[in-house]
Length: 381
Ligand code: COS
Image 1 (tube, rainbow, N blue to C red):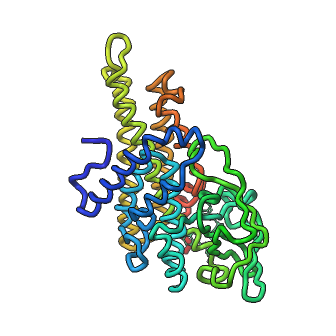
Image 2: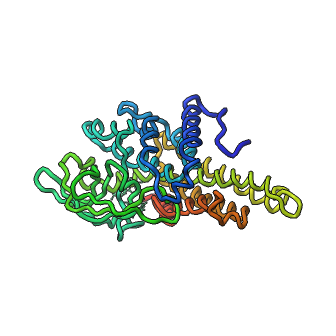
Image 3: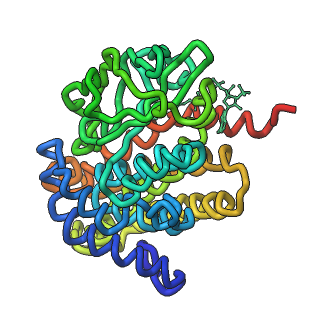
């Protein structure tokens, strides 16, 4: 049995998508990932190429030029990209899961034709701006203002940690009007949209994360998504989808750390034997492999339930919680197995260790996931 996804058990579509993603990851991402990490940047061309292959339209319906993939197939593809570089994977994941889901579910026909189609065709990269300096876990406390002025909306405020905020063509921005939280489609060339300099992060260094200043960003009325005041629920739905993406991003990171560890422990000799012959090492590898497999399986089960139309808010939080903590644990073990080499930038596992950490933080911390799971055990009645 291999650690990676095995192709024979997949449907024909899944096999094609996984092979395409795997080949792209092998040739166009993995050889450059360490350098992108050092430069804290990857070129937009990588995303554009993925877009031309259809990977920006994985979750968009076919009638709007997307691939209309089921969630499991989308997760399979995302894991391949994440195993090569989690920074590229998060750009894809945000775009496919959050703005795409929000537009598909709540966009008008005109909005879907104008924005969703171009996103699905890979012509527009989208991001999501919910968090603010004073509203992270408590997302409903956001205070970016949206004021109606005749036929326009005017947005003003500050956003924090916006993935793709400096590279995207449009952002789904959450702001508060007098009737509550709303979602707005904000083209990033709108006057007053000001991304900050990219954040200098511990991991996921090549992904674009910025603060945003919204200085009287004036939008035509038709840039409001769905109903005024209903945006918080739309954002939470987006995050339900997003959290499954982060779960498999974590699986991809953990799987690669395990693959490196398995190879290293076969090669590295101490006390006259390869490391793999020590039972302490075998037990560690066995536990790492078990967590990778379990994390992937949980994400896929939740995805299957989502595709059946079930409410998967709570199980998506379970999947994200379990996979992100598994990734942190697995990458910590990988660094330990590599010993002194594991602590060096020249070896791959320290990047995976740094990349894993944020999966326990963004799109809802592990503490928030536990709150959602615990609340789900006592449904409001
Ligand atoms: N789908 C649809 N609607 C949802 C929902 C979901 N998954 N979760 C909540 N809602 C709705 C609720 O039904 C409720 O609607 P009504 O007011 O009509 O009853 C509303 O949203 C408010 O929900 P709730 O009372 O649960 O909100 P809270 O402020 O208590 O907190 C949490 C909700 C903590 C779960 C939310 O703030 C959260 O997920 N925080 C983390 C944010 C996050 O992930 N940030 C990362 C940013 S992206 S990098």
